[in-house]
Structures are given as structure tokens and as C-alpha cells.
Image (cartoon, rainbow, N blue to C red; front, side):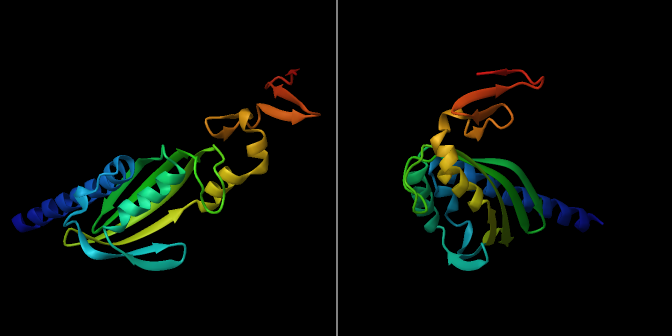
Length: 185
């Protein structure tokens, strides 16, 4: 019975360490561009699954990836909303926010403030990161930075999101709608 309790403690401790590592990937790596925490924390090459593809990446590739994103979204911030650890897996729900100030995916800077949801799962073996899966709302990002309506009427957007239900465009005038049906031009 005593060794069973010891096994549970060890598993809980490993899960906490893995969850903390995942938080650091975003808090330190993505948000602060510091990557020293990666040293010795991975199995070297990591299998990375994204949009139906699988590739091998290394810890050395993360700084370059962050730099590419920051060239288009200099104020990029990754917010870790939830982290769930179970066994050798850690899942993270994330929100990416930033302002599109440089070229991205063949699109010139739009000055759009973007907010995109993302999910990632990390798999560890013996405390080392060996595999990752990512689900990223790429279509949502591209829509936010390339919508002709959004670009033409960006002054009608608040915090990077449309004022849907509160502001409409009619006959060239901005019309505000209230819940009571009153209108003011």
C-alpha cells in the first residue's frame, strides 16, 4: 500500500512538472522570447502534428518560429487559459492576441487587432517532451486580417472585434441600434 501512494505522488509530481513546462513554453518562450528552459527538457527531435501534417522539430526551432510571428504581430501575446495534465499528456487551451503590423500569409499589414483560439496537446516520456499536436484557427486569423469589410470599416471595430448588433451601415451613414428599436444617425 505504501508504494502505491508513492507511485501516485511521483505521477502527480511529474504531471505538475510537465504542466509547468507547458506554461513556460508560452509565458517565457512566446511572450518573453526567453528559451533557456528548453535546455535538456526535450528528447531532441519532437514529433509535431499540425493540420494533417507531421514533422520533426527541435527546441532550436522555437525561437525562429516566435521571431516569424513577431515580425507580423510585434505585440503578440499568448494567454494560457487552461492546462490539464493526465498521465504523460498535457493539454493547453490558448488565446493568441496581437496587431497585424507586418506581412503574414501573403497579406500586407492590416493593422487589425486579432484574437485567435488554439488548443495544443503535449506528450512526455520520462519527463522529456517528445510529441505535440496543435489545432489552430488559421481561417479565423486570415479572416481577421483580410476581410475587406473589416479593413474598410475598421474604425467601427472595438478591441479587434466587430460591434455586431450595435452598429450597422445603412445608406452611407452609421446607424446605432438600441435594444428598444430607437435609432440615431
